[in-house]
Amino acid sequence: SSTNQNNSSSKPTDWKEWLNDLVRYKDTTLIASALAENLETIYEEFNFLNGDIVVASHPKSGTTWIQNIVSLLMNDANPEKVQGQPLYLRVPWLEGKEDPECDCGYKLLETRSSPRLMKTHVYGSLVPPAMLQKAKIVYIVRNPKDVAVSYFHMHRAYQFLPYVPWDEFITELFLPGKLLYGPWHKHAIYWWEMSKSHSNILFLHYEALVKELKANVESIAAFLGKKLTADAIEKIVDESSFTSMKANSDVNYSQVSVMGHEISPFIRKGKVGDWINHFTTAQNQLFEQKFEAWMAQSDLQIDFV
Ligand code: PPS
Image 1 (cartoon, helix red, strand yellow):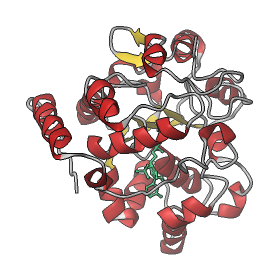
Image 2 (image 1 turned 30 degrees about the vertical axis):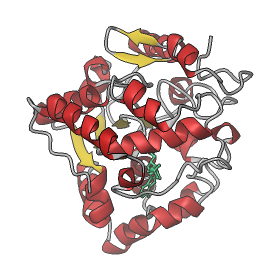
Image 3 (image 1 turned 180 degrees about the vertical axis):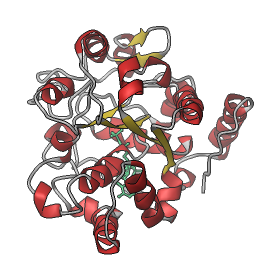
């Protein structure tokens, strides 16, 4: 079966077959069976520590961006301290791994000392209780039209994910929530609700980072209890700009060949509103209808432009 974690498999050609291999984990989100197994191990055995710092998100929402900011903040805004270390090793993916050659994130993390940095795409309702109790969690949300576009290009490029034509990607996969970690709205809304009652969750918006990177870097610093000079903050803002990250092989995943950068680079466009270049009028109407229904009961505000 396609596990999305298997080193020897090649790009799936039939997306319907690929979809059949995903599991509806604990009746909520769709994930690959290998990820489900890892999550089970994490619930049972992983020892969360006070001081753990978690970057949480639905895929394609700006996870890597926050990982880079958090990693720099925790290394005194000194890029030299982290130079040569791939971001996916500095801030490992708790329940997965970016590089098939690597150990799964939780195994890497077990060998590290506090404060440990990690990322997760886990659903709000499936957060390990000890994580919620002990960690500081930075969640980032992004408007779902741009998430869908970014996700589409990832499926095009990534070796373990099938290419799905855009129309099917939107109507048959993204909107019905049939992608890894879907559906988007439940992910976003559950985390949003949790953030209201947990002061250890900082809830950020991709669109706000695009507009005001510095203010957001400052609020992440304050949340993590880091007092940095104005120069240090400037340094982080500079190092985490789209242009810097696109060019930095430590953070742009260019070392992970299964991601298929020659088809579509991981750090791709970094724009708010790229969806306008992808959605037809009909697709947009359908999306708007669904979005309205999803958000009817929620006060989570999402900017699309
Ligand atoms: S993943 O695979 O879930 O970890 O992907 P994730 O990192 O969440 O999302 C990838 C998108 O984030 C964009 N990105 C940025 N945008 C603006 N500024 C900076 N510095 C930045 N870094 C990453 C990246 O380009 C992907 O979005 P798209 O729209 O595809 O460009």
